[in-house]
Length: 151
Image (cartoon, rainbow, N blue to C red; front, side, top):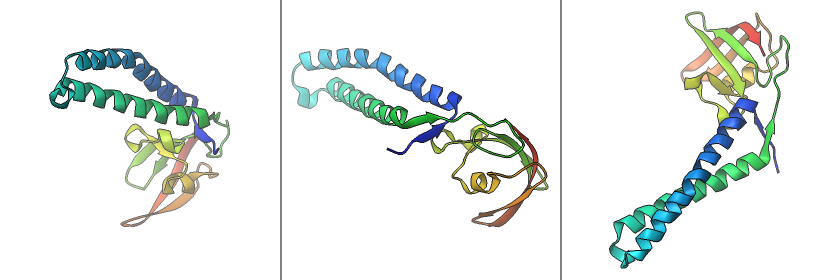
């Protein structure tokens, strides 16, 4: 099985979400049991809603279990070279951007995290402060200058 790279914080978020669903599941099962006791399941909206919610929770739990089983926490390397877990500040000449380089499952550019597999993440890997990288986007190519690298 391929390992899925996570930061410690990223894996903790996945585990917390799984634990929240595990805590919610008994209540949903209870609702489903009550709905079954009402009889005529074909026209029982409460039953259908409870069954759909339980199905959603069970699906998400299975998804999280697969992710957690394959998860591997990768510690950031303290150095001046961009690697997994590095914090970087880059500039396109007009605006500065601050990102943390993380795995695909925890990346979210709106939260200043980018995947090591994204075009920008791939271009940054192994680079140092002062380097420039070119990233091809749908509108052309953008050049970024690396202003700061930290763990």
